[in-house]
Image (cartoon, rainbow, N blue to C red; front, side, top):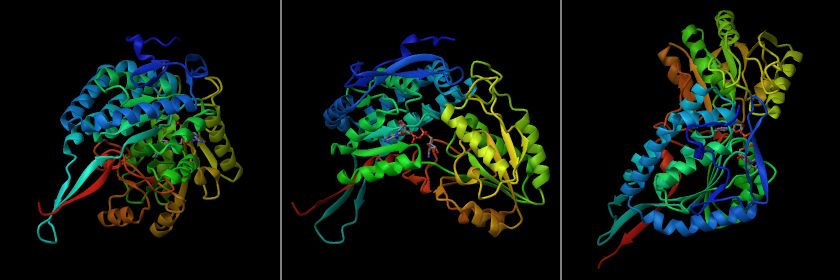
Length: 488
Ligand code: NAD
């Protein structure tokens, strides 16, 4: 299947620096379809020269962009949103092709990404400062909000459009300029979004994008880390890379937003609506084939309802249709690469070796291709198993039986991560007690689908810091300047 879109120019195969498409990198990076392994395009495998050229352009553009009136920046972002939605089908196809998710999910991601662009277009006009009542006579005191400067955005492959929009829209709304390095597995969606931003009127130099392979990425990002002109890093990805960026940012004291790994607990109490809990878990767990940082990774079910819940869940999971994005019936696509499938298989094997039982699934689906894994439900999971300690990032639900609220809260919080947590209960007193006790940045109560442009998304503990979306999402791209005026 070739990569055919109704608008062929959306497939860009060059870096975008200072308003120009440039393919002067030394090598090429192949982009493949995870469903088939077929090579669909190649993009530049960039290095420090391209990284520096991008910062030169972003720094040169910053002075003028920050002074563009907020209403005008908002209008450009609004046009970007409109163009993204006008190309929803093509962009959805591009996402599905390079990332593997079913087409309906690809198109859904485009709308989700656009919702952030629209939200931050609106927020751009509400970047109010403060007038502070002066504690002494003859002074006027102000707190002004200013853009931090050049922002480096580094994104993962699991939501190639949404991750770009969640970072770049607030940066541009705030008046920052951007250099971006998208994930090596999914560069095409990001390049298409940058084209549409350019067409919407984002001026040359304001938004620059540089693609690179996994091997050459550190050279690109190190150039940005070492460059004092880059004032902020915004990163979504794994915790080890996030920690590396934090360490390497220390010399130039860059501002950082880190959206890192999770290990979300999902708790079903004995007073839960079991059917709703099954639905919530299906929505939270199986979106994007389980390759979502807020996916439930450990599912705790009260002993009184465990067997009934497991039965209902296994029936739903066993009915999921696995297949390529090109088949409209597919609900679970291929995993992103062989590394990902091998990790999932290792987690299931380890759990079974330690006494877990496979209720449904449990194996690779090699008949479909090397990147497929069957949606799986395990019972008898324990804290010692790899699937409990590490993020599986795949379609595997390990169930653990519990009997007591205090015991399950201790287990839920017994992880270095703190991104999302979910629980199902009908008891109002328990609801607020448990929501208070969970050590995460996001809590879902009787709800499995939580992300929204108006809500703050981000973690605590080793899941990172900073928030994306909501009124707080803009603050990460601003600093506060105190201005004091004395007697004239
Ligand atoms: P990753 O950390 O390997 O890669 C993320 C990005 O970092 C990619 O662009 C990659 O090229 C880049 N990168 C890799 N090594 C680097 C280095 N040494 N220096 C600089 N940049 C480097 O993660 P991934 O495999 O792409 O994504 C999966 C992980 O990301 C999971 O752990 C998941 O939980 C996490 N994630 C978190 C969120 C969130 O919002 N918190 C969202 C999506 C994914």
